[in-house]
Image (cartoon, rainbow, N blue to C red; front, side, top):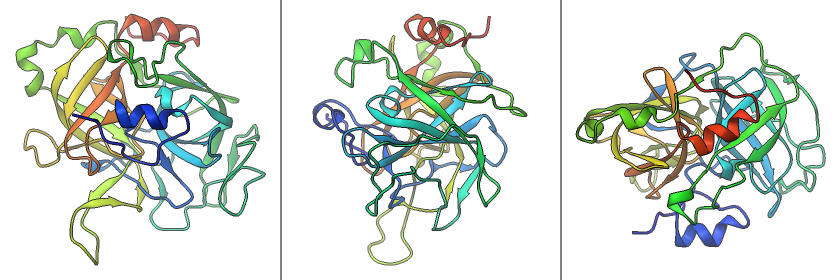
Length: 307
């Protein structure tokens, strides 16, 4: 079964995703075509170390968004497909509410054109506070050197970082799980284990008018949280059942949640990587960050897991 694309695909990833995998969170922001976790509830200040990140793509020069988690005062962990092949810097906000309705007021690149594109991307150093009182940090991004670009499930490595130009104060970074933490869950218990997903991705619901088929909605753009039961565990991937009709949990990830965290027992154990359907009602694939190939790379950025 092909994993279907969940949003407009970026540059070099386009062909590979159609044949191999779907990105759970790359969403063009100018039209704000998607916004919050499927099911679940508004997070409020439940996970203040989870941020929305925005960046311009090198291929089409449009702006996209993902989710990321502060793991040191200057480093956020996210997905590689949110940090590879970008232009300029990445901007970051920890505000739980970005916009209830348009306009969203998100800062744009200095050279943004009428169609929302930018050749340079963000070039500011920040941080800045906008007229809505939201603080925006600026950082440089990097993708895991062994990221397979959705071609090799055994060497997925869909993890990236954003290194901020200034440290974040007043927010406690998340703690990454010790190596092999997910392996301690018995296979027989995986389907009975809930994982907490946080992100700024798409909420799926019926529109106010027109066809009443549930679909991704544009607003509000807020941080949401949902619990999803485990489904499968591989050396690289935690797969969960993100269907909000599953009575074992409350929802799952969707467009815009890419790179966002999954928590278990207070530890961050994954970042959201991909999904299977266009309406975000099936399985979600989460890149494990409790594995040595990821943790050894994160250590080069001063990120250490729990002992």
